[in-house]
Image (tube, rainbow, N blue to C red; front, side, top):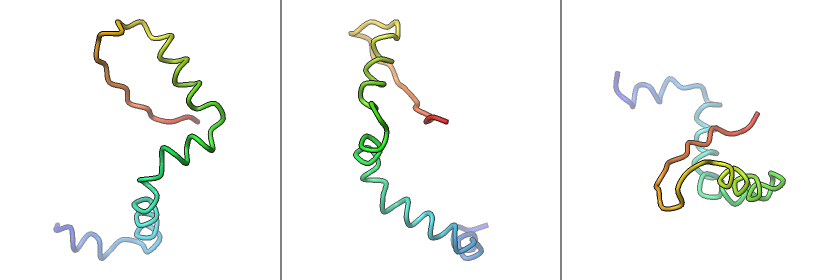
Length: 66
């Protein structure tokens, strides 16, 4: 199935949600930091608690909070 035919059958709310997400995605980090209390402190605390060498490179996948 082509992308065009898939998009044409999407529910209008799905289309609006995607458009809103695309509009706000560039501002995500700034908005999240202002709305989550102690966001920077939480990340700093987690990084300080992880047992890794400061010279090592590692990747983190943040899945969010419930």
